[in-house]
Image 1 (cartoon, rainbow, N blue to C red):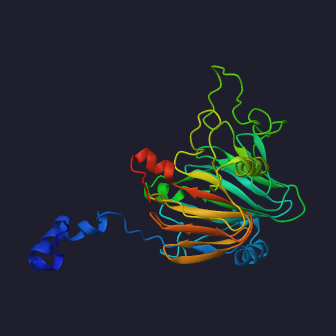
Image 2: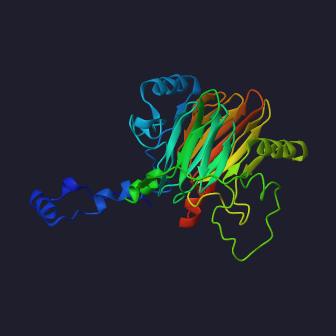
Image 3: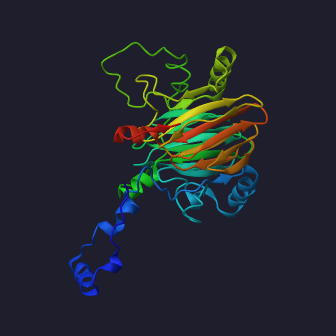
Length: 343
């Protein structure tokens, strides 16, 4: 049973002054703010960033600011609940749209937060991670885990845009966010691991004592993801096909704090997932439809991105065949022991 707690104003002014002087504060007036009953009260609000509105601004940023002055030319997707300038889309997830123009190089650096790139538009760009050159094709998911050196280059003819997803807010909160710069990396003269060692699900290189890479596969090609989703749809039970991106050696999520899930909705399909304790962001690889988030409807189209706070009530409906990638912080919550789903 909920009880009414005392307020700060009920305390004598002299006592409040003494508390301030001592550098302490009473818990009970703030108890319900930090420990609300039954469910959190998120500051995060549903966000929707249409590609049609973001892309022109990103292209203009390419004209206004050379990559040498930006290091990473990115427009941050700001959580409406925190307002303009917020360096996060949810409490733990940072999102940004990044542009690389033909012939440009984004310098090498390494940082404590982990990042994932979902390629939105264009071809010819690549990311080098620990010497491995990773092609960037539309829909691909490319990892740059915390502590791994990475740089970007562009050998194509047209602008390339990708969506950055980082656990940056977590590292900022922990006061552990920092980066170091370095020289461009020498590239191995071979295709990346997704094309060599981990080309087929269920198969991994024969186990050897010296093979101990924490992140054995850095690129997840979209064509294979879509093919797997279609196979599930063709032979499934009518439910929405979903596939988690996982480490091919361990089966764990690709990063310690962020998870990624590919979704396929058939034309006309409506699905209502459970309310989840994790926050989520959705990137539309292809298709059109709508999602109702806590009573607020988002009409989404190709390459749009939208977000949902913790325990949000969601309903997805597709006007045409649609593919989305859900970005979420379930892996972090599971490690902390409190991930939860409610019908």
